[in-house]
Image (tube, rainbow, N blue to C red):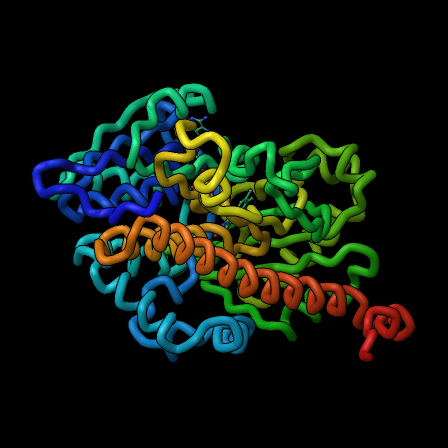
Length: 411
Ligand SMILES: Cc1cc2nc3c(=O)[nH]c(=O)nc-3n(C[C@H](O)[C@H](O)[C@H](O)COP(=O)(O)OP(=O)(O)OC[C@H]3O[C@@H](n4cnc5c(N)ncnc54)[C@H](O)[C@@H]3O)c2cc1C
């Protein structure tokens, strides 16, 4: 497929966005603001109920390379992975964004907020309309349905999340990579209990604070991420990760009350309680509501191929994936723990929207360019995640000199 990707002025290009989570919604909102598309957005859920608190990275609204590289754990990685012109290009793409969408992103990057606030705000924006029409369709698609609806030159964007519908279908069976893992490369970071709570006072936290509040937690450390909440300057949102073993993970329900944790995993519960008690003593504040507790496996993964490029020079030129452009965006392409994933998905969505509007690129060039971007974002998030995990491992063994030395392999 080497056709130039522009269609005639009268003929809108059909775009199917499958999955209307945060990334599918942003992808749709970005394309909607450009003329020349006929967009269908498919979603299996009928309402947005996920109220877990999430954080978006400030680099999403950076308007200069320096601002883009301001995260201390990320700045050098970005410089190592991207050439300056690539960063300029990505920044230029996002400057095409409509003022309303940009204002919304600036708002959302201001602190922790519920996931469904992001989904509802983006849905509202899409509902206001734009140069390209969007039809929202409630349906659970499968691979056969997708292949049946794809017409030549259609664009299909899979935003179906970590259990991506298409990720493992992007490698045809004659490819050497068609094996057990097919198209997914996954690295397990840890098993964890994630506890989140709202604290009714503004509370700032740094590494010293994390250390002193964990001094009596010998086995399980409560490692928090603390941020102001988006809509309430006077409160703090705390999400803490407590590393547990695989066996403990298996013994836990997916979500539980803190009472369950106190009864069945008292040492884990105590680590969280000690942390909270110290914050209360320090600030004079208190918990607002009960902590929410979930168990989670923290994996870092990516699709080896984030597009259908392997189908294009294959043996089945009439196959739907050989005649259209297929992209994975969001958790369907890359997944990472430690509060980074949505931002990474937004980053890829903004880049892809920019690429698609640049009609001087052929369809093949768009695929190659997007693959390159996803690989670079993977390198970036891989390095950042490994560094976070390493720092976390060291933090958990700070008072155990020999335990610490075991983790400090220098050369
Ligand atoms: C406890 C917890 C805390 C987190 N905190 C953060 C955080 O602070 N910051 C951060 O960046 N990330 C965080 N994450 C990760 C974040 O929630 C995900 O990265 C994000 O939701 C991925 O967005 P997405 O749109 O790619 O996929 P999803 O949110 O998974 O959306 C996929 C959508 O596709 C739909 N869908 C799936 N299959 C089909 C189908 N066959 N047909 C039609 N529709 C389909 C689904 O219903 C869903 O709406 C957290 C995750 C957890 C579990």
